[in-house]
Image (cartoon, rainbow, N blue to C red; front, side, top):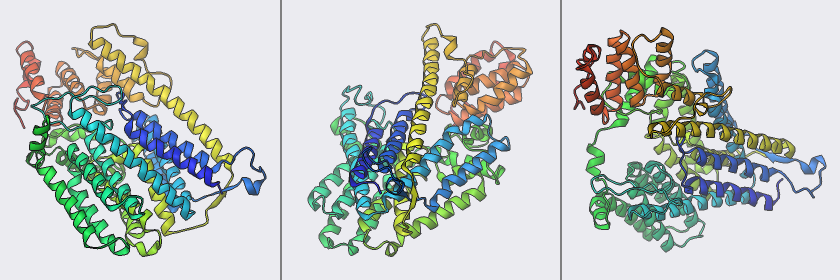
Length: 587
């Protein structure tokens, strides 16, 4: 078994990775969370290595060099999804096959996180330290993010340490700290609230300090203007209030304090426009969020339609975006997205209904067995309650977003799942030689380095594209697809953006556009596709592309409406398509 010192080092590595995956400010196009994910991936690999590898001075005899790891039945979840993705590749549903390399890598790391979490829970003391480390990392990251939010509210330029947001009195600001996505930041605040509850339950924090910190975290969540708080705050209140009966720290004062926090959150949420105006920025109102156009409804309708058209195996992993382009013209205006913003519907669209029912049904049963039937895990309530609250948070968020597609959310969740699985179904673990894990660590680090270098080629390509738009000369070599890359789609995108629609294009050229344009349902790509159709005798397809453009990009659509109107005065082929286009102010 790994020593206490090594166990602490492993937890420190993982906790530091969690903290910096939220705190660092660099978001580099096109995968803006690439380096956030890279930090947590390296953190998991490093933590696992420190967890099992003994010091050089330790005995190298087989019995003493061996460690115990837990391989939970939960591994069937990532393993099953990997097998299904490989089946889709074999059936030609996903091309090129290199598309699946990163998803499979993430799923393998998710499995490793489960093993790490289950192995941490083999001993009660190590479990307590693990929960404390993860809770502290979340709480510190949230606290720093709250400071960053106020720097952004004040309009201060603290780059490169804090992402800058320009203040506009006419546009509601949603300060997002360095997470760069308000809903993701809101999720972090609820992870932090779960950690705060853990520290209160274990008497690390006093009741007064816990209330004060909770109020600050709730204020940060209000600033994000994320509606997941409308569900999670009452849910957290109900769950924690129900758990006071199992605690010595119970009674009316605690209930009153938590009820006061619930009321405080409601007041801050409803009064945000007035509060924000008083402190110098514009904040959205509840009415704006409730009465505005629901983009998610359109995404969910699209996912349902794709699942209905492909009920058995779906459209293929990461196929929602192209699928949305193919059917988007048939629905009301929404927005282009690569995810359905709802976990069950996204799985149904990409994997089919049988797999979705099995996955979601299995997860619900597992959650009930591990987190609700707490009598199965006696004496471990504080750690279990932290994990349960965290899983509540990510579960609710997954109904309206896609947090589990980010490694800096997925991997900590995998660790928590592994821990509660071991609490519910304890075993002694399996003997594993440290050399095996160390070899995996080295291979993993080499892979991460190679992927990072590969990604940097993509980043350089996008910089070259921007140079062209700024009037500088493009370096062609940066736009050419290398012999091997895990990001082939971006090099096809570079090629797409350089295509000039013209009359007399070959069938091969048109087929290329039809193949790759749906993968990038961006407004300018859809417009290129429509122009190619219009200039090459396919006006019905051109009209369909413009209908899709309006449905997926209703805000910039008027600009393209005016463009086609002007072109129609010069070319009857454009005019024929223009006459079928939605109105300029179409909803």
